[in-house]
Length: 336
View 1 (cartoon, helix red, strand yellow):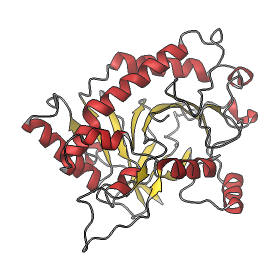
View 2 (tube, one colour; view 1 turned 180 degrees about the vertical axis):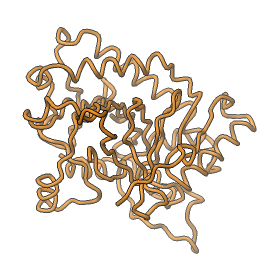
View 3 (tube, one colour; view 1 turned 45 degrees about the vertical axis):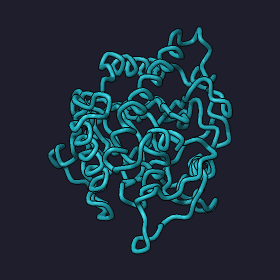
């Protein structure tokens, strides 16, 4: 697979400035633009989301503080051995942790080892997964959190005295992202798909080279990235060619996940993407890269089946129904 460096505007920019409460003609047009981007590319830049840039910058500062801690300290909050218990710290082997070119990110999951996390794309056979992990391990660290009151899986936090204030700030930023998801993003998708009334509830019940090519599991992802670069998106879909998603100040990245692809019967694209090491800085070293993805998901018991209006006798359903929990657990167990 190759990477092509293109003008970042090859990926559409969706401006939410005039979305308001979602009832105006301007909001409907924003929804149409968003669905067009999701249908044709599967990725988009968002601007004027009302997510304060000060909060974004603060979270990146907390990320740097967290990942600069000694490995022994980070392991006080280990990711459980079960892949589906997607919480806490995951790292690479200790001999690699001192290199300055690792990829680091805090994951925020709106449903949202030690062991090494290894992204795989629709590979579930244990022997094949073991081969992938042996030959092409993802080189990154991550720290996963979700709602602090989620009943099924508890967050795994560092002791408060280790990083005072991190837990409170991370939870607050999670709530900020969820507010944008519920008040603007999901309603905009609903308007663009021309779904019936109260569509946000339909979606809401419906939720990482450095990281190999993969699609995201849930509904979609809101990604905050620093200015280092490295994210690439397959374009056009199925071509094997990847486009660099160049960071644009004041924007966030959005991409469709597998649930929205299945719900929409492939009307919306769950697009392959990956992270590649950016060019070295002239010293033979590669910069650290920090990112913060907020994963949108669905209630575990919700059956993911094709939405009304997205299938017909001439356009049959492409996917068998599956509960959100079954699908997410299957993908996470293949990752860890």
